Image 1 (cartoon, one colour):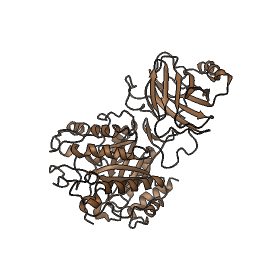
Image 2: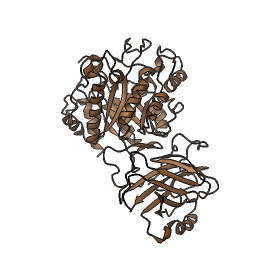
Image 3: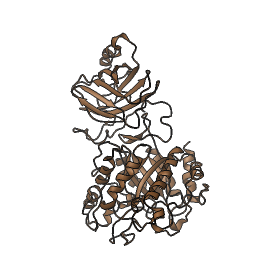
Image 4: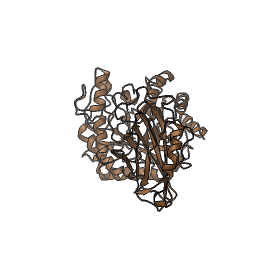
Length: 521
């Protein structure tokens, strides 16, 4: 939100006929060298269309615990893996391997793990053979009695003919095979199709709050936090049943310790304070969403928040000089934990500086020299590249134009993400342009059909909650994540505030979110 400056199972069975599956089962179920294998694999095609399919493997380990794993198998019908997730996928000829990643290498005795992929096929799509785990033979189990259709019930509008950057538009029609309850909180997150999934393949829908202060206090000489952030404060947030996520806004000048920021509030001190806050949220089972909120660069054009070069207000886009190293540093700080989500930039508005929508979306994605903006812009692709250049696999959110309220060009200008862990973010308030069911159906739903969509900020400036009630119901119907603005003890003159006290006492507006989440069970 624009604020005034404050001084105070995927189990895979890729067969096209039941007879073909039955014919293959005896061969695939045979154990190597007559010994009882220490692993079993369930393989299933979860979606199939002309020339393409989506599949998943579930590995069950009955042998010794493993700190890393590598599953191998061989295609027999000329299939090719084009993209995978929840593991590193490679293919040489007919042989496919998927290896564990940093967040899911542990596979205890009796444990299981799933990994999914997209592939191409031609003619027939038979079940692979020769499943091995770390070189040892596995049995194939759990074949379905009914084969998957040759085309999905709701196939993608345009089936991919080249390696897609995301899994298909249509998500699996059955839930992934996973242990009851999925990950322990907070979940290790990755993207599959248009869903956020945990490491077991269970869908995750985030509900939570924003916690403002860390984006402005440090740049104003007022410390780092606006209110308490200790264990008791987190317990107060968790006292609202159903809160599973907290969004943490950051200031790039404070993170990088620019000279105007008081030493006590910037550089190493700021990084340590933010890291401690994020780690406490994780320790309490909360998913932190770390986002870049206030940035460097002089902008005095349409809708300027300030004329200051420093990060003391919202700018149309981040600046390349500081935002790229900022995200490199942030990603290095948090990349070891994929429970932490990165939100690249709070509320872009290059559309207010440019003369056409296409110019604005091009600036949004590519950065560089943008019409109407006097500094070199860090585009979404450049910031994403900085994150991925560290090896970080964390889910990354990207808001659209018009202060993240306009997603009309998001899909067409979507940056390339080698990990496939990219999601869209939207901010919706009662005073925004896209603030009614008709707009949500026409502009948000099509994006949510292709990638995960997170409503990173929702709210209304009336001190009531009729608007947010209606939007939350729409989001629930589409199984989408959302976070209310904001868990701060302000009044309506400073924007929607969920609480009147940091013990969790709700404002009238905050009661809308609190009661709605409690009603979800």
